[in-house]
Amino acid sequence: MSLLQDRVALVTGGSRGIGKAIARALAEQGAKVAICSRDTEAVRQAADEISPGGGRVLAFQADVAEKADVRALVQGIVSRWGQIHVLVNNAGINARIPIDAEDEARWIQILTVNVVGAYYVTREVLRYMPNHDGGRVINISSVLGRFGVPAYTAYCTAKHGIIGFTRALALEVAGRGITVNAICPGWVETDMAHLGMQETAAALGMSPEEFRKQALAMVPIQRILDPKEVADLAVYLASNASAGMTGQAINLCGGQIMS
Ligand code: NAP
Image 1 (cartoon, rainbow, N blue to C red):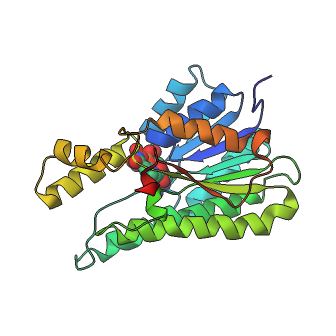
Image 2 (cartoon, rainbow, N blue to C red; image 1 turned 180 degrees about the horizontal axis):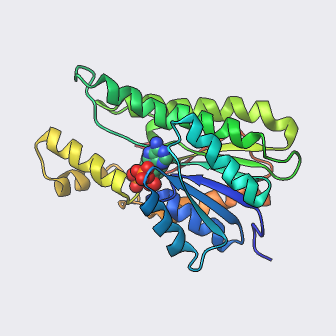
């Protein structure tokens, strides 16, 4: 029997990167998985790739920062599969925004997508998450939810905020038998990490390759993580094996947090 046989899961931001790897890993363990992103074609392609022939992985176009999209997304899943056991709040954006940059709209957008989006999706999904049946909320924070990085106040605020959201919500839904935990990844090989390395390298006047070397020197295991490694932890948190854990923020960062 697979670990997640016939559980229903929603992974936001499942069209690429960490979200896609999590969706694939949950599906491999027998879950029925819905994924969403803002790009209809990209999310459809990801679903086809994970589950050729379709049926067990459903793709939805939805912006987590838009309440109407979130409502339609959750209704779409529930009308097909009845309930949602596992929610992975993964959708996120990042950008380097020095505090004196004239980029207020982008700063607020980072908070809106990463934090308000997680709130909208969680609130809606919890209406359809059964009580005392292994309900799980898994939030993707970051090591930038653990420490600060200059010029990343928006992202650090958002990712620290997700840990607070995780702790408070864990207490609020414990009586329903639902656990809520966060994963705090370090550098993971995705589009977001590449963009972050490019932006910071440019600001420091070095090449992305030089910056990558410098960044990985701060990681004891000396390598960038594969999205699959985050997905494996998400599978554990989605499964019965993690039933005793709630309100936790787990660092998955090759030891970076210690430096
Ligand atoms: P990514 O490669 O940029 O993928 C982000 C995913 O989120 C895409 O599917 C994207 O699709 C979707 N998305 C973005 N904004 C959205 C919105 N408003 N509504 C719905 N979907 C949205 O990023 P990633 O590296 O996989 O990151 C996934 C999560 O891990 C994020 O929360 C990120 O902060 C966190 N994280 C990443 C790293 C890292 O090093 N990569 C480290 C720590 C934490 P569309 O653009 O098509 O909407």
